[in-house]
Structures are given as C-alpha cells and as structure tokens.
Length: 233
View 1 (tube, rainbow, N blue to C red):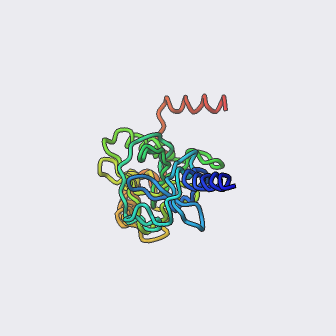
View 2: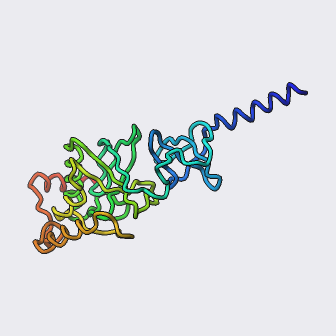
View 3: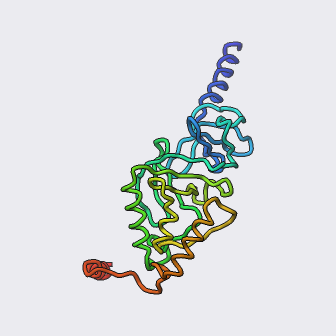
C-alpha cells in the first residue's frame, strides 16, 4: 500500500513538473532570456513555443510570477527587438525571425492597398506597396521592431503590432512618403503618429502615389503578364 501511494505521489509530481501541453493566451506572451506565457485564469507561466501561429506551453509550471520581471504582459514599454527577414507578405505585413521563432508582424498605424485579401481584388498600388516593402526588408542590413506602450501587442490574428525600422529608417514613414500607404487604425496616441501625419500631408499636397488620382504605370511586360494571367485564370 505504501509503495502504491509512493508511486502515485511520484506520478503527480512528474505531471506537475513536466506538463508541456495546452495553448497559451497570446496577450500573456513576454520575451526576455526566453519566451513565456500563461494559460488562462490560473495565470501560471510556462516557456512558450510557437506552432502554426499559436503559442503552446513547454516544460514545467513556473508559477504565477512573471519570469521577465522587468516586462509586463500588458505594458509593452516601447520594447525593441532586433529581428531578421524571413518572408514577404504584402505592403503592411511581413514574416520575421525573432529569437529563432517565425512571427508575423502587422505594421502599426498604416494601411496599404490590398494584394492578397480573401474577398477583395488587387487594389491600385497594392503591388507597388508590396514590392517596396519586400525590397526594403530584403536589402536591410538591420531590421528592428518596436512595440508601442499605447497599443495591444497582438491583433486578433495573433500578429505582432509593431513599428518597423530598416537600417534605422521607419518603414511606415517610407511607405507613406512614397504614396503607397495611408495613416489608419489609430486607436490611441501612438509614438510616431505625428511623423506619419506630416508625411501623409506632404504626399497629398504633392499628389504622390495613392493621392495622384491616377492608376500606377504598368510596363509593357507587366501588361503582357497580366493578360496571360487573365486568360489562364
């Protein structure tokens, strides 16, 4: 009997220490030496592993104290992270590598014309915006993302909401300056909003890109390519 009790006791300890399943709440994710998060109302932390766009617990229960003592899961405190390029998506979205994990980021405070929307057709200047962003990210020697303390860290699709810098240049600002994006989705007083609004004012006054009232110019080869795509669509 004593031996059975002892075995059950060991099993309970083992379950508690080595539990490694269950999804984590995206808003709880914090990163310092490692990435951590908690499940739900109990708010006990585990190491976090990203799989197919969702965060999952890995390893033992670390208790209810935030492992990143200087980081609050609800306060981004303008946290900056150095990342590397992984994959282009469109004008205001990209996939990047953060701490050896692939994350999808949505650029704060701007909107570019659609290229891959499930219901909308490709919009004017969508391809140009997408190509511009892709070129900037691929050619950058350094890419930095910055979370805004006045913004949620993630949107409803679990994309990181960030300011993004390519070689210390704010990519949102570059897109607006080229007339390839507009200031949008302002739900609070974000850090660089005033800079973007100034650039947008300039682009509108000078009728650049989106504000020109004209369709983007298409080369002869692009016209042929688009024609072929329509035939075989």
